[in-house]
Length: 408
Ligand code: NAD
Picture 1 (cartoon, protein in one colour):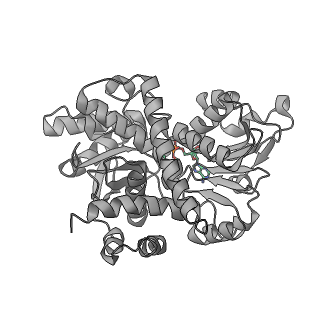
Picture 2 (picture 1 turned 180 degrees about the horizontal axis):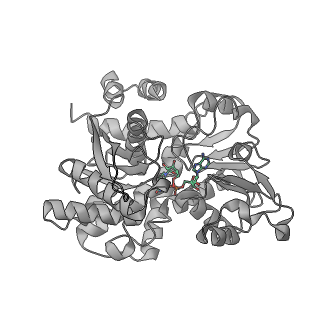
């Protein structure tokens, strides 16, 4: 990513010091802490919070629980948040946090102890005007509730705006749970209109969690054709379209998406997550983890359009191959900025002591996404040689540099 920042700063004829500032995090907090397991054994877990850049306001970014979490990944994701928040036009810097462990191997009581301990390690460094965490991969609204409760106990305040993505009944926001998927949907609508992509386009979505499932549902409810979905155990493909509601019902019973492939749905094929990336489709949406489109599979992607709903799903080498092949890639900092924009509305709601209706949230979100899309589209229109990723970075870095000029 170093290259795209340097190149963008140079293309925009901005001073080099802006690129230098954007190359490094302002602060990274790293810690290990003990966890007493349910069976009495003590283990140690490692956690991080990277506060990358605060030029536009308090740091903002999610918390990830995953065995692959590490210092470099957290820093990279916090960097992405910096550019995303700038592009979304919200008053936030960028951050990210995480703990390296597999939450599937821990009980609910253990997950609560881990979440509360994470806050004990960090509470001096976060707050509604300092750094505002939110959910990310494998972290839920319930975990945000434990975290904000722990924060309020430790500080003796009732500062719900310190965390976003909370349960609605605990000062959360109606519609926050689907905001990333809905935001991606708004971006897709704009792009479909811009490129004249027909409604019958075949859409493949990798990942069926918060982002992938909500996006698949919203597309399905609006008459679009989702031909492939997947979760960590594998995926399904059906050229005539998948009944997303039925797959959601299976997931809510604790089953996997592949359980949809029964005798009743004989034309549904089982595929791997790799297979999904290479599947026969017009539009591909990675909505799971990082680095899913790499130099070894980028040439095999059949889609003409990619919408990066996940963070960092395409490696730099793969991006170059896709550009070369004329595949249009809408970048993560645009496609998934609906999540943090929903979080922003939640933060405003908590700080103002008011309660937004679901309809107000959707309308606000639509406005944010359309504005961000049009910023990217107009950069692209000004210079058609660049990719949509470069266009998004130009729009984002313009805003960051305009604020940074007063700060150093
Ligand atoms: P999630 O934990 O709710 O879901 C992740 C999904 O990925 C699950 O369906 C899981 O089964 C699947 N998965 C796990 N391992 C996989 C693998 N090896 N191959 C394919 N699929 C696999 O997470 P989420 O919140 O939906 O986040 C997905 C992506 O979107 C991440 O990159 C995240 O950073 C990004 N994102 C999330 C939000 C948000 O509001 N939740 C906002 C912006 C960006």
